[in-house]
Amino acid sequence: MRQMSRRTLLGNGAQAVLAGGVALSGIPNLGAQGSAKSAPKTVDYYQKLGVTPFINAAGTYTVLSASTMPEEVRAAIELAARRPVNLNELIEASGAYLAKRLRCEAALVTSGAAAALVVGTAACITLENEQPILDIPTDMSGLKNEVIVQKSHRYGYDHALRNCGILFVEVETLEQYEQAFTERTVMAHFFNAGAGKINREDWVRVAHQHGVPCFNDAAADVPPISNLWNYTQMGFDLVTFSGGKGLRGPQCTGLLLGRKDLINAARKNNSPNSNTIGRGMKVAKEEIVGLVAAVDWFLNQNDAAIEAQCRQRADRIAKHLSAIPAVQTQIFIPEVANHVPHLLITYDQNRIKTTGAEIMQKMREGKPRIELNPSTGGAPASAGLPGGPNTIVVGVWMLQPGEDMVVAKRLREVLQEAIRA
Ligand SMILES: *Cc1c(COP(=O)(O)O)cnc(C)c1O
Image 1 (tube, protein in one colour):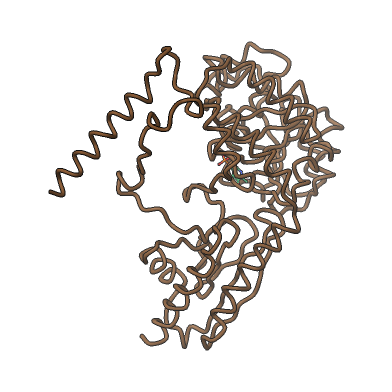
Image 2 (cartoon, rainbow, N blue to C red):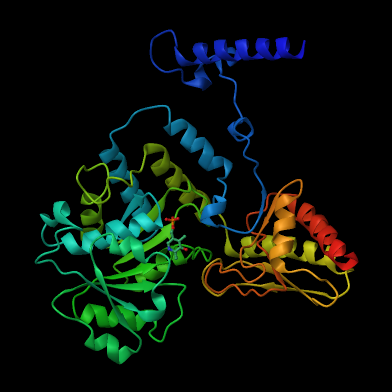
């Protein structure tokens, strides 16, 4: 009986798919104009594949799929997916639109901030001569290939630059930086959330004295919203932001902002052009439109409201935990990356005999699954977030309405179990 009704359901679904796919005139069904009957059944593929989503109390971490898209963004993507366009026209138009909204000379949607690092570096190498677009990274003969970087700015995205065949030249002091320029210097790279002795203004000033372009990786560094133009206006020739973190666009997008000649060169090194370093980092029409819509959405937000909302969630969770002995809570805002309130929970390990890592695992195994911030228990997370064996970090930024209390209740349960143990 059960099986029969399931078959019936599948049968109807298959019919619906057929009806939805082939409209009378032979052009794809445009949905809104079609009848309700012809809409295909929506399949929950997470469920079908047996992959369980979780409550995101972590933040915008790549492996945790970073962020979710607001309705405006999802709707724009849905529309864009229906009709073909010329990608070069879309790249041109979206770049001009984004540059205007983000107050810079030029812009390009890439397949992520890491991809922006690749095509931005390639742009610096191939700015004066296009031939090497074909040659990098395996034939670097005669090409400028040195990228100056602060030693403390070597990080988990180095490989994106190295993809272009460059070599890093490390410096620690302003004096060393001034001495590091040679006729092979092609770029000066800055990690916006990194620590280091040389500040942004000096970084730009010295590079420009030598006629060398400066790149600033600010991938995770909104809010504040104004950062979207602060760094280009400070003089950085190229700046990138991840599209799928705070901006809440598609996860596989990024913004490359900056000087017109460099953005043009980055475009030439990027998909849809074949035989380029960027061809494997294709950006589809849905992603381009999705990121433009996300930028529009994000520019309609405001910093104070984002902060207040995060604080409210953190306070609510903290209040629910306040009855547990030996637990302390505090609100923490990282200086640069992920610059929003996080809830930091520390506890006396003599009374609560468990580690942050164990708590994280218990939260992950509960129903519903909850992912805490990866710095919980002291694992490396993003720049500027504290951690330790007895530290729990709740990233409240990406929680959906109502989820703060679900997290609070489960955390209290897990901590109280550990007291009893
Ligand atoms: C996340 C991140 C990136 C990569 O961004 P994607 O959009 O995922 O490619 C690069 N640099 C820094 C500093 C980041 O935090």
